[in-house]
Length: 378
Image (cartoon, rainbow, N blue to C red; front, side, top):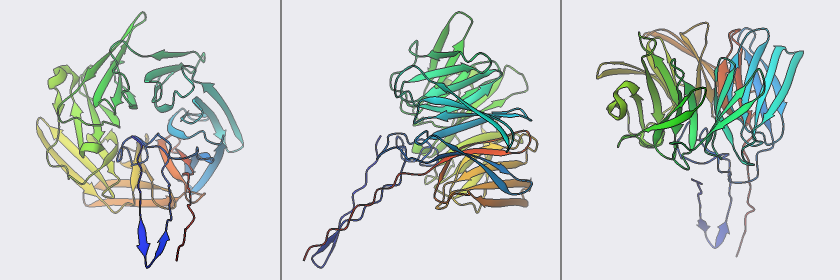
């Protein structure tokens, strides 16, 4: 849904119109950091796109400029020496792949998504040799074989039209889960060697799910799907074993909140709230839930866990300069936020992931800005 804002000012016979459009992608007003779910452009494609690696040991950034207008929307990483970094290039309909050994030893390649001209690869996740991703513009789920380069797309067969596919995750049993942001559905994709099928889960309180996280149970076949629904100011979880009756919505979440990204660590669900400048944590036992809030942090959006330290979380900051923050949890009485500004000011960071060498990878782009001239009369 394209967002527009019109402002009129009148002052003693002088009519001045000054406009600034600084949004990049627009489907849901407060989905995933108010920018992270925005894809209908309000102007020409932003020209500057980057991939960054932040080294916490020395506080330095490595910068890889990407093709103008590529819109590196989501990032996933695997491996060490080299690290393989996968990127959805929403604006150029490609999946990017960086093999990073050191700042002096990198290799970049791309895989075109062939379904439609504006397929819009959006979010992605890794499962073994497979790179799974959503195609926002084509209403499809894509799968890239990182070994062979073969790409398969899944659509129809139970998937609602114009679903507005957002985040994507793979459960321990191999099911692929997708957030249907426009259709207000949680979507399950089951793939066999000969067939595939989509199944959709919905609830009267479910509106605009955007980010997902999978929590494994004690039994490897048992898990829960956590999700954020910023349009309805909620988070929730689905226990698939209970079917359509498996939804649980914690009742006391603030009505002015906009839960954005979500992860699972330390037996808790953690999520960012860009609207309230906070990060939150929740534990659920049966139907009883308890949550905690942590601040101050300036406009937190994307969220990732350090794979070598479950008590360290990283998040992107969509504040004025654009930045990165580290949250260290020792106990409820001892927590810490550290902030770092991106090397290029004014960027909007997008996806974020932490590699096993503790390097923090994130995409970023320059929002498009239009300045309208002032018109003076009288």
